[in-house]
Length: 455
Image 1 (cartoon, rainbow, N blue to C red):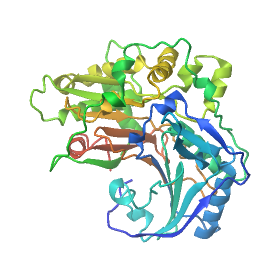
Image 2: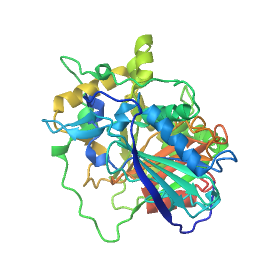
Image 3: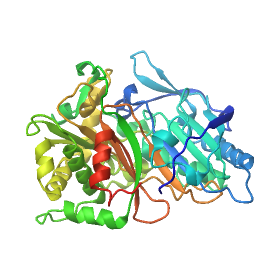
Image 4: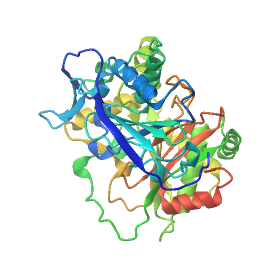
């Protein structure tokens, strides 16, 4: 996956708006309580990068763009939320106006070949060049022609409307439309699936996990020379993941730690090790691992399982663990793996998600955010891990072959880092891992774990 660097220019040749091909009755779609848990401060959104080495002899850039636009217009009929606009209601809460405003669609040219794209450093190659800046609506798309004839398809979406699961559904449907196939999934916007209970109830632990915006400490004043957050992309083989699993599983454990638990535990240890701070025996290091609640809310109910499998929106929780920096540094990886498993296990239940829905209801209309992301927290370093293993890189074929790379790019603007592992498009079991961490954290990982994370 390694590639040479080099500056290159991107020229936007055309801008237009692609709307759903069928007329739509204008209507308002309320956000669910789990959507409302994602406030505007999280708006630097995900960009989905799909790079194809070549469109093939039967496709020119112009013909590929036509296929993408026509398929987009078709896909926006069932995925009408992506063609709408977010406005505020009388309570000040975000609400989606489904008015078929459409999707901003940019056509661009980059004077660089695919093999010369420095994909290891997406800050240089993706940010502000190949990924569009979302200025209006919910979704923006940029299709960029490369010097070699390949293309990059990038999307930027508003996280308040869709989580990665929902966006993955859309990408597959968009590709199916391009291939003139019937849709394998029809999205559902049935908000009643996530209605709060009456009376509501929730565990006290949620008051520690989330915090109303009004309770946030004042934002930190940026310090000159502060360590910056940077983005990097790595390749991890299945063999290395298996090794981490073995090391992260304690002898007393009945089950082997999952690959995600093992990778998260290893990175938690690395981030703690990079923290050169006074009183490290008192300072804490936090890590959150995102949990999708679709299967948890279904809980064996066949009808609910079917309904949640096609649900479009956010169904996420952000449990986190916090441990003393020195403990994470000094204890074995198996101990850290147990700690990851323990804090995740508490969020793997139906009651956790029902309680979370009720927690948001109890605090509305005030927005809330994840406690560990609070600006001004000086307890120690922190970061979040979100699994991108459902990213359907092999299914996003717009008619000209499997993409050479599929990745999320998420420089989300928070003080804490962000990591997302995704499947390799070429080798089953291998991962592509996106990291957005402090420069010092990245440098330590590259120094001490170069045998695991390959650029």
